[in-house]
Structure formats: C-alpha cells, structure tokens
Image (cartoon, rainbow, N blue to C red; front, side, top):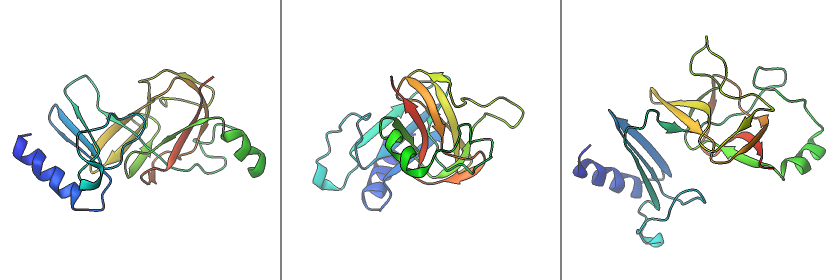
Length: 174
C-alpha cells in the first residue's frame, strides 16, 4: 500500500461518520480509528481536526489482529455460562472487563466449523490470546485479548452478525 493511498484513506475517514476502518493488502495491514481508546497510543493529530486519533500498522507477524461482538441466545453454543437474574448479573458484571467488537461483521468462535472454539467460559487467557474471528468484507479478523484473566461470559452467538462496540466477552482480570 503506497503513501498516497494511505493519505486518501485518512481523508476519507476524516470526512465521514465512520469511526474505524481496517484494511489488509497482502502482508500489510492498517487500522485507523477516529476516537482513541485506552489501548491505542495517541497520535499527533489535533483532537479538533477531524482526523483519526489513532493509527496502527501491522507488518507480517503470522496472524492478523481483529475483534468480534454479538449476543448469545439462551441454550446456544455461545451460552457457556448459566443465566443469572438480570439485576444480580448486572451488578456482578461490573467487576469484569468487557471485550467489545472493534468492527461490524460476523462473529465466529472457531477458525472453521470443523475445529474447536478458541475459548470457552472458564478458560484462562493471556494478553494476545485469540478469542474469536470477525469476518468483515470477506476478511477474517482475529480478535486478540488485550487483558489476561478468565473468560466469565461469551456474549456473542457463533455465526451471527455483530455491531461496532458490541460486547463480546466478559473477562475476570483477577
């Protein structure tokens, strides 16, 4: 991907309502976010300019980084934990870290239908562990954990659409 293409992408993002875009071309990957989050480093763009607030470039490292989101239906394969009453569950959930979808796409718990899921409720994960895949525009984006801990709930249902910023997983960091 050449510099002119990247500049055009930045201008397109700045002039639109899109908050995040991720593109992959061969071994080159770029992610552009308008609003910063605690994980991303701040860019040199002024906050009032409308330009993206963070940019990530990824060179070949074996796998692409991605994230997913969704909601699980009771009794589905994604529902690995018992359903608690809503009021009690909401209070307990506040102590957990919520992993959210960075993009709109289709949530997958495993790399293919014939293979085991990446994580199940109760599994311990470390920073960088793959949690799921979100397919967006025919690109499979691996979502990695940004925290170490234990998977408490899986909130997305396999092979179902997810929205940007939709909660996918709850992780107990303790």
